[in-house]
Image 1 (tube, rainbow, N blue to C red):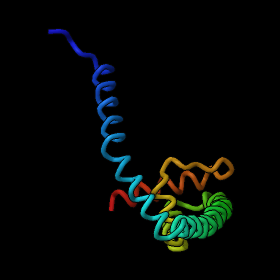
Image 2: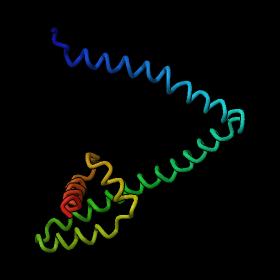
Image 3: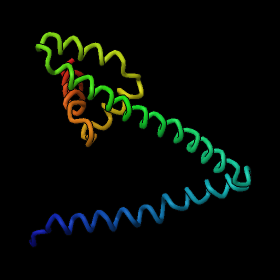
Length: 135
């Protein structure tokens, strides 16, 4: 009995997956697209693009606002680093309350996100994520 390497297993899996997609999934999706085209004449696709575009614009503004907020917080944190640890913890909790739900979602969803111009904020973000995981 010969040994089958991991690479060969992956190739078999990939081949079976492609055949499954072409023979089973693709005809179903094609029927669905044809039905949608007959019933809505492409307007459903247009509506989906409009909704996604409409969602994209506020998301971009929210990310930009978050970036501006991080710069402000970085300046505040730089000045507050001179305070003792107790006062710093109070400032941390106070800053936490100013985050919007969407900003908290960005920080939680992208823990590896780093801002190059706000070193102290990156430390704040890591501390917040650690505190959130502990609770």
